[in-house]
Amino acid sequence: MDRNTAAGLGAILIWSTSIALVRSISEQVGPLAGAAAVYLIGGIFSLVLLLCRSKGSLLPLRGLSGKYLAGCGLLFVLYMLALFVAVSMAADRNQVLEIGLLNYLWPALTILFSLLLLHKKGNFILLPGTLLALSGVFLVLSQGQSISPASVAGNVAGNPYAYALGLAAAVSWGLYSNLARRWGGPGAGGAVELFILVTGIVFLLLFWLTGEGRAWTWRAGLEVTFMGLATALAYILWDRAMRKGDIVFVAACSYFTPLLSTFLSCLYLQVAAGFSLWVGCLLIVAGSFLSWVSVSDRETPTAD
Image (cartoon, helix red, strand yellow):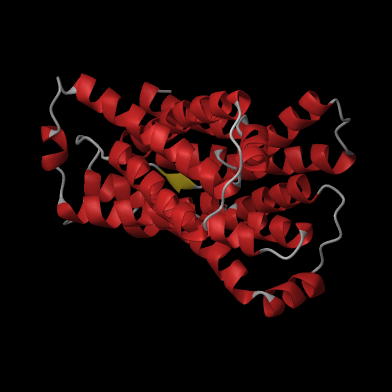
């Protein structure tokens, strides 16, 4: 495994360990204020790293195509906003869970879009592999909650915009992950540092518009600072993997994000893992492996 592909696995690990911290920040200072602070700190930290790498110059960003900067930048911000608004519009915990399941379609969509946008070659094993992995994700996230096709249909009918935004988030991230490679190019630099900062500014504007406000504490400040640095690092690693690494392998491994997050939460809260978690683990392992081996890593050069 090369270091670019390993960078993607590092991003998955960081995201898996950050769920509890995100919840803690949201409960203390509010979701909008927390998101704005995390992405602003992450964006500033990322730009400092970029300036250090380029000896104090932003010239590397000028060499990137306008299509990459505008298209991938818009998809990056859209993903964050769509997921945030979708979760905030959920009427209850079951709807949050179902929207989360929609969001976790992005690993499957990343692999699917790699066939369409990067012209990779897939075979018949991809479909059963995807279904197995998604079934595993469902078992891991549901954890005994009563979810049925009828309940999902009823919730979608009663709250269609929230579910549409959850699906839009998954589509946006799948597209971003592929177009960052196609438009940015494996040999070029990226602008994820700029995308993170713009996301923070957008969340800050939303925070000011809504007037959401809670008292800050030293604990909240430290958690936001740590989360901002971790968030920046995760997205920089992911961007590197998408542009230069094995995109299909990393996307297949992304199915493990909710599994690792649930396992770590069980350890932290000293809660025994249920039977469905272990079954979900096996399904994710099998589905991820089949999804990976079903797609050839050969890419056909594209005109753009």
